[in-house]
Image (cartoon, rainbow, N blue to C red; front, top):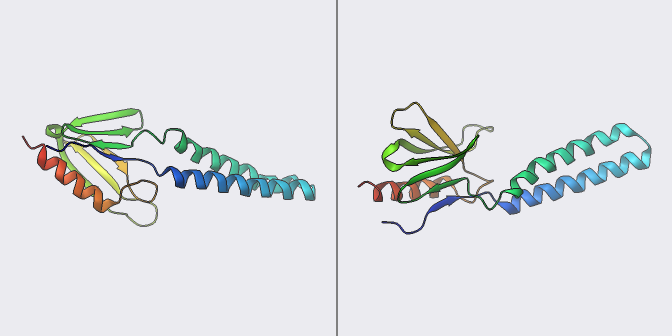
Length: 146
């Protein structure tokens, strides 16, 4: 039996850096637009403020994990809240590698009937590497095979 839960969380430092960088660039573009009296130059500033707002949402709930695996099963955030499955309800759980430029590595959880599947992100924006996730999930799945 494994005592501690395996959690995947966001890298808050990365999100904070992106928010601050976007806001600094937006301020720069805003200043240039004001200084040159050209309102069209304010468009990049507005876009950068919107990008900063998007990343600030990641900071807002940074203390909440994206994925948790323990002795009982897995819980992960879905589009509409949390999903929890016992180890006996899991048909397959695997770490999918990066596919090209657009698809980061992910943990894919499939139910025993194969009709439902859920994913949780891995990679640069999270605190867990794909290799570490594979090891941790294998340890917990074996320990819960009772």
